[in-house]
Length: 184
Image (cartoon, rainbow, N blue to C red; front, side, top):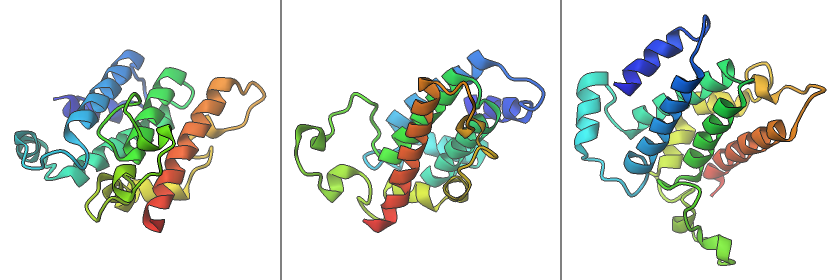
């Protein structure tokens, strides 16, 4: 139902939007990602069967496409709303890492260990979540059109603050990870 509501609210964003509703949807996406998206998730989940029946989302790639569509929509329409922009970029960042976990996850190379291909998530295999993400046309759009023309929060203004710079850093970090996927 959240995905159906998202389609309705996104179709009306040009007229008006609801910040609290958008933040609630982003929280839903965050929890959904942690539970149902990633290389460790069982793909025969009842949820994926139900998504196929109700919304025509047949597999993880289609669900990822919905996530990226929402990310692009938020960055386009909510670029001047810091809470939504930050939370949207965190979702993009988390997806680009390839883990089904949040920020507080243990990452092996944080402890000075050398990352292996499997522990890094990126390039973990031909069917990895991140590889599927990179193949999406919407992700290719972001990789090819990362300008303020498409994403207003990237615009340079005289009142640039630390939060704007953090948003840009998060955005370009995620894009950099996605660019590196095929390089191994």
